[in-house]
Amino acid sequence: MHTLLRMIYKAITGFALLAALTGPTLVATAQPSSGKALEFALAPDDAPCLFQYSAADEAYLVTLRENYALTDIVAGKTTDLEKARTLCTWVHNRWVHDGHVRAKKPDPLSILKEADLGSNFQCIEYSIVLSGALAALGMPARAVYLKTADAETRREGAGHAVTEVWLRDQQKWAMLDGQWDAVPLLNNKPINVVELQKALATNAPGLRIETASNTRAKTYFNWVSPYLYYFDTVLDNRFGIKTQPTGVMLVPLGAKCPTVFQRDTPIRRMRYTNSVTTFYPRPVEMLSGEANKPSLHDVGRAY
Image (cartoon, rainbow, N blue to C red; front, side, top):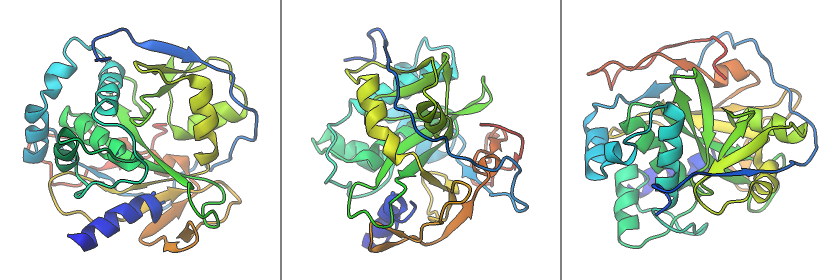
C-alpha cells in the first residue's frame, strides 16, 4: 500500500502533481493580469489517448453516493453545471486546506472518512473527492494537475490540482477548483483550464468565478495564473479498482517536455502531447453495467 500511495502522490508531482450549499451562489468578477496566451495544436495525435471512466452504477460509486447522500445534495439542480457547482462547494466544506498533509489512502471514500474524523488535506484530495462525487452522479470527471513553467527547477510550490467535469448538456469540459470553491466562467459559460489560461492572458472581458464561499476572483486568478502552463491527467479515471497511474501531459507548442518535478521527482509513465483535441476527449455515454470497459471517444472538439 505504501508503494501505491507513493505512485499516486507522484501523480500530482510526477504527473505532473482532490452551510453555503443551500445559500445563494456568490458571483465574483475581476480583471485578470495580462500575459501571453499559450499555443497548442488543434489536430489530434495520430494515436488517440484511451481514457477510462467509471459508470455511476459501479459498486464503489454507489456506496459513495448513498453514504454521503449526494443525490439529495444536488436535489433541485437542473443543469450539469449547477450540480457540479453544488458538489464543488460541498467538497470545499468537508475540511480545511492544509498543503502539508496527505490522506492515508488516495480514494474518495477513504479521504472523506479521514475528513469526518477531523483531518485536513491538500489540493489533490479536493480534486480526487470532487471527481469521485461527480462520477457517482454519472458525470465523467478527472483530476487535472497544473504545473508552472519552471516546474523542473523550482524547489516547491510548482503544482496545483483541480477537477474537470464533462457537462453533457453543454458538450464540453469545465474546470472546478474544490480547494478554493471556484468555478471559472467566461461570458457566463464554463471553461476548462486551457481556456482559463487564455482568458487570463488576454484580459478577456466577462471572466469571473462563481462561488458559495468567500473566494475573491482577483485573488484566485492571481494565485492560479502561474500554474497554468503544463496540464496533465491520468488516463484511467475509474474508482474502486486497481488502476495504473499512466498519464498524458498537454505541453505548449515549443515548450520543453518536463521529465522531473521540483528538481528531484522523476516524471514517469507520461505521454506528452501538444494537441488540445487529444487532451480533451468527448466521452461516449457510459452504459449501465459497463463500468469496467474502456470508454471510447471521438476526436471532435470537445473543449
